[in-house]
Image (cartoon, rainbow, N blue to C red):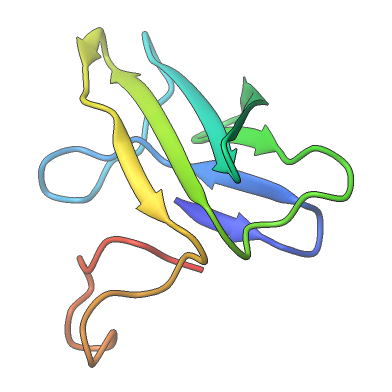
Length: 103
């Protein structure tokens, strides 16, 4: 998951078990933003190698939770819950390329 703050969108890449080969073939992705007891579904659409989800106007990813539900090549995944703001996990992102959240 990448947050493109300049254009208020989230990019969701569906990678294989080796954290490679993004695909949208036979795949879906949906996202919800949870803040202060409110749930806002995000509008998501497929692009060349990722899904783009647009944040509602005036919304940001400074607080709350982001929930993503994805299906990659017809294989349903579990709901992924990200605490906001998004950040890299671990102390040294350069040595841990698979740390999870990307901002």
